Each structure stands twice: as structure tokens, then as C-alpha cells.
Image 1 (spheres, rainbow, N blue to C red):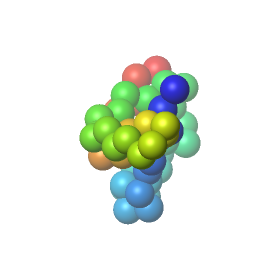
Image 2 (cartoon, rainbow, N blue to C red; image 1 turned 60 degrees about the vertical axis):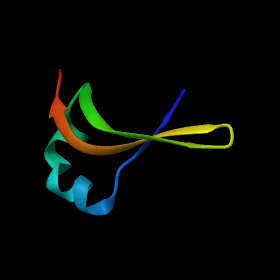
Image 3 (cartoon, rainbow, N blue to C red; image 1 turned 135 degrees about the vertical axis):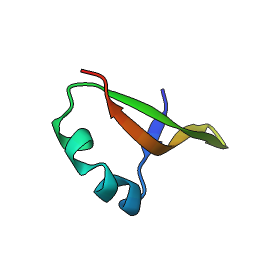
Image 4 (cartoon, helix red, strand yellow; image 1 turned 90 degrees about the horizontal axis):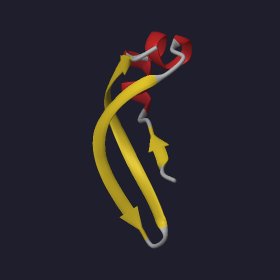
Length: 48
């Protein structure tokens, strides 16, 4: 399991895809902090 981190500017630039898609394709970079795993999202694509 991983958390998806979406920064405000990235969310606003991709709002339509994030809110309306049934499934998202996400690229980004992985951050690990103790037991937690995060994917810091950059671009999105509507994969539905």
C-alpha cells in the first residue's frame, strides 16, 4: 500500500482528470519515511 501525494499546483493543473476519471495513470517519485511509502505525483492521465 502506498499514499498518493498530490501537491496543490499539480492538482489544480489536472483537476478534471483527478475528479472525473474512473482510474488514473500517475507518474512521480517514491518517498519512503519509516514504514510509510508515498508516491509524489507529477503528471496524470485518464486511464478509464
